[in-house]
Length: 117
Image 1 (cartoon, helix red, strand yellow):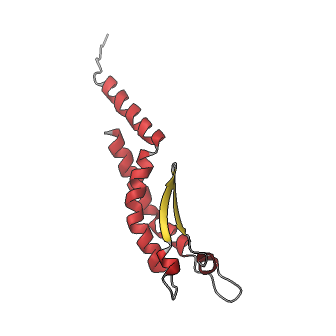
Image 2 (cartoon, helix red, strand yellow):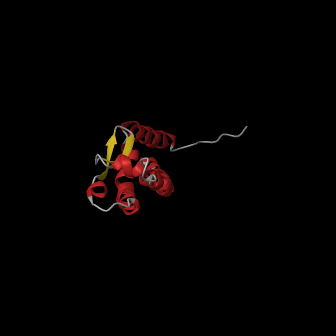
Image 3 (cartoon, one colour):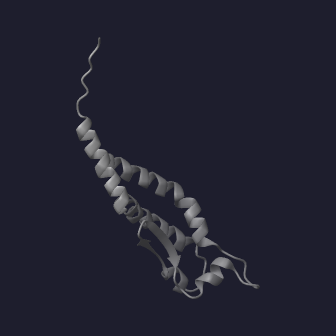
């Protein structure tokens, strides 16, 4: 008969429990989002081709629970983003998300690893 003693399981269980709590509280996503917006907001602003700074200046981000929102709050933003009968759409927010999504995924992965340490 072979006996194997496994040690350290309680410590591992505690680390996993803490990581689950961090996930449940939204800390992992919130921490990743704070870093992500430092890149995403300037990218969105650079893709927003408008003559005035109103739309560009209205681009911001916020957290709602475990959801990050990248938005342009100017009333004119919808016309620039979605287009009109006379203006082609410039979906600068959609393009920003598509271009920067890999960064957000890496940041979330990094925060998950931190939570598991």
